[in-house]
Amino acid sequence: MSYRILLLLPFLALLAGCVNNPSKKTSLATAETPPTLKTQIQETLEAFEAPEPQEITAPPENQNLWQHLTRGYQLQGIRHKNIDRELQAFVARGASLTRQLRKGEPFLYHILQEVRERDMPTELALLPGVESGFRPTAYSRNGAAGLWQFMPATGRYFGLKQDWWYDARRDTFASTNAALDYLQKLHKRFDGDWLLAIASYNAGGGTVSRAIRRNQDKGKPTDFWSLDLPAETRQYVPRLLALARIIEHPGRYGVVLPEIEHDLRFVKVDIGEQIDLKVAARLAEMTTDELLLFNAGFNRWATHPHGPHYLLLPADKAESFASKLARLPNDQRLRWTRYHIQPGDNLGKIARQHGISVQELMQANHLKNHRIRAGAHLMIPLSSSTTIAAINTTAANAIKVRYKVKRGDSLYAIAKQFGVKVVDLKKWNQLASDRLRPGQKLTVVRTM
Image (cartoon, rainbow, N blue to C red; front, side, top):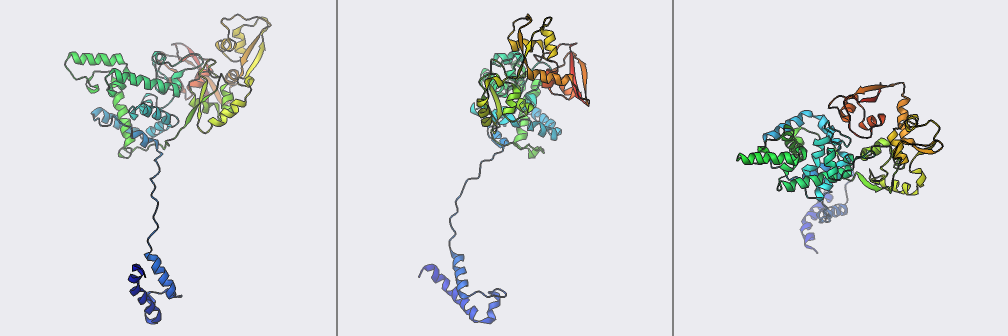
C-alpha cells in the first residue's frame, strides 16, 4: 500500500460512515442522487493525482512593425528643448499623424530590413516620413523627388537614373539603397556623429562642414545643437527624433499608431525586358494605379526599354505574375498599332492624331530626327494614346482647366491644389520631366 493511500484512509473511512448514516448525508451528497462510496473514493483519488506536466512554449513573436523598429533605436538618449517642441507639434496633429504613418505601410518593412542589415539606427527608417510623408510620388518646390526626396544632381551621383522613361528617385528599391549609402557616407565624413550626418542629408555636407569650421574658429562646441545651421535643418533633426520617440511611447502622447504587421509587403520580380504597364497590371491582377504605387519610378506607359527590368509587386501576387509572364508571347508584352505614313504627314500631326507626344513617337520608333517618309510605317503605343484620348473625350461630369505656371510652382503643389495625382498631371500634359517654367500652361482635368 502506497504512502498516499495510507494518508487517505482516515478520510475514506469518514466518507463510508456518512453514506451509512443518513443524518449526515446532506453536506456531502448531491441534492437528489447521492454518489456511491466507490464514486466518491475514485473522485478523491483523482483530486490527489499529480497534474500532467504542461509544455511551456515561448510567446509568439510580436508581429507589430513598430515594436521591431524601436528595438534598433540608437539615438533616444538625447534630450533637447527643440525635440520637445517638435513633439508638441506632432501631438497637435492628432489623427493626421496616424494617417501619415499609415502611408508608410507598403514600404516600411523593406526600409527597416535594409537599415538593420547595415546596423544603422532604426530611427533612420522614419526619415521618409519626415522627408515626404511616405509618398513615393512626392515633389518639392526645389526639385526633390521620391520617398527620400533626392535632388536631381545628388540622385545621379548615387546612381539614380533619371530620364524620359524613368526616375529612380521615385523607385522605392533603388532610392532606399541610395539614401542609406548617402547617410553612411555622411556618417563616416562626420566621424560617426549621426546627428551631423542627418543634418547633412538635409542641408548638404558642405553647409554643415562650414558651420563646424565657424564654431571652431570661435572656440565654440561643434555638436549639432551648437551649430548655426539653416532654420529648416535645425528643425529637421529634432523632428525625426521626436517622431521616433512618439512611436516608442504612443500612449504617453495620446497617439494611435496604425496597425502595420512586421511582414514582407513587396518583392522584386525580374521581367527580362520592356513591358506595357497595363499588361503587367493585368498579369498581376491589379489596377494600373495599384501597380504604380509600388513602381512610382516609371514616367511612361511602359517600363524603360533599357532597364531597369524589374517590377516591385505585392508578395502574395509575385509568384502568379511570374508564372503568367513566362507564358506571355513576346509580341503581347507591348500594345501597339501600325500606322501607314501618308503624303503631307509629319510627326507633330501624327502625334496629335493619336494623342501622344512627338517625343513618345520618336522614342517608340527609335527616330534620331523628325524626318519621315510617305509610304513607310510607324509604331504607335496604344497605352499612351488610350490615356490621352480619355482627356479629349472628357465626361459630362468633368471639366478641363488651363493653369498658368507661376514662379516657385512644382507639379506636386499644383496637383495638391487641384486635388489630382502628379502622375495624371504629367500624362495630361505629356511632360517628359518634372521641371516647369514660369508662364507654362498646363491642362488639369477636374471631376465636378
